Structure formats: C-alpha cells, structure tokens
Length: 315
Image (cartoon, rainbow, N blue to C red; front, side, top):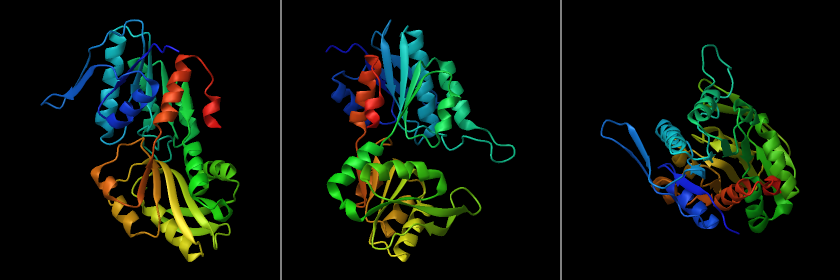
C-alpha cells in the first residue's frame, strides 16, 4: 500500500526518527535545522510539502527549551509552506509535570506548551505516557496518547519468571499505571507511600503497601528524573524481603546524579524506552537497558494517515 506523507525531525532524537522512517518506508524529509551563532534557531524545509500531511518527530527533552523552540519553528515553516496537516509526534512531552497549580504563584506550563503548539499550527499531537491524562484536555486539537506498557509487558514475559513477579508503583499516583502492567503480566501490585521533603526531587519512603517478600519486583513509573526516590524505593523493597528489584519507565530523563545513584543502588536493571536519546553516560551504564518505541510510533503514524483506529496499539 502506497503511503503519501512526509516525516521530518529536528535535533532532539535523530536515531529514533531514522528508525521510525525506516519502519514506515518513508524517508526523512530534507530540512535544515540549526542554530546561528547568536543562539537563534533556524529551520528551512527543502522538500515540497504543499497539500501534504507532514509529521514532525521531536521529543521535547533536554535541552527542553531548545527542542521545543525547534518544534514550534518547524510547525510554522511547514504551515507557511502550505502543508495540509501538521502532526507533531512528541514521544516525551516536556513540562508534563507542570500540569496543575499546586502552589501559589506558579504557572501551569503544560497548558502553556499546548497553547503554543496549537497556535503555531499543529493539527494533531501524538505523544506517549503523559505524566497525567488530563494534559490531553489542555489541547483544542486531537491528541493520541500512546503507552509503552505493551512493550515492557512483552519484554518481561519473555525474560522473567512471571510466577514470582510483582509490579510496584513508587507512589499512589502511579497505581493505575502499575495495575495496567500487572494485568498484562497476570500478577499483583504493591504501592509505595512516598512523601516529598523540601523540593520536588527529594522524597522519603514511609511504607510499602503489599507483600513483596521473595518476589521479583518491577518498579514501574512514567518518568525517572534524578532517580532519588526510585533508588530509595528499591532499597525499601530489599529490606522488606524482595528477591530482586528491577525498574522500568517510559522516559529516562536521568538528570543530575541519576546514573551514579542507579549504579550504586540495589536495582538489577533499569528498562527505559528510547523516547529520549541515549547519552554516552547512559550507554556506559551496564544496568540501563533501552527498549525501542520506533515500531509503536511507526504504526501510529500509518494508522493516522490511513484514518484507522489506534485502539489495536493498546492491546
């Protein structure tokens, strides 16, 4: 079947964009995306996109503001080049944790980013494992919210003894996410009682709800940032008798001393997707395993183009 659309990418995750393009059979479009010496971003679309359906693969990961600005300028360039539809494929949605006003005087940055993308000219958003589902409602254009859970479930089914597995949510907010994986693995869940102390990157594990003794525990979350609370939770699971502790998350931000913490922790392996590109430091860490989302994104792009339901991707 002939596919008639264009795929472009900025500088956020070229490896992922190339993998998606290869799977779809549609080569990456020709676009110049770079910075001038004055730090201004520049975009030039060299392919003809008049009347075309254009996809931009661009996670807004570190450097978040640079990658977001590249995305916005690419949308504008495609719109001014008369693209009929502009679909933004944003595997990692930056500012996703700023989704509510829980302190006086702060911004709801996720809503602001949604406004920026819509105003720039995006027709549709494809994203993955949002920090909270409510972010979909921040947009006045269609949003396809994909999940990496089937990818993790498939891997664990092939590599772990499921009779001993228990999925663990680091906090109550991630219970639904943990339950989704546990359902696929046909196992039980446990939940951590996590209390924030001071700033957002410090947490204290107060308790673990669930029997984890002699279990192979999979700590399952959407984002791993500094890995502080993750490593504390792993330590707590081991103290409560867990046989082994693995961790998995869609987005491995791994900022600050995260990799150092993981290397020193009782976590056997950390499984993350390639929604964020792998730095050299990540590649050197033997505990970190990358699972590809390229097939998932390629399938979503094809189905959107053919106007087919995406529901099969959630099975």
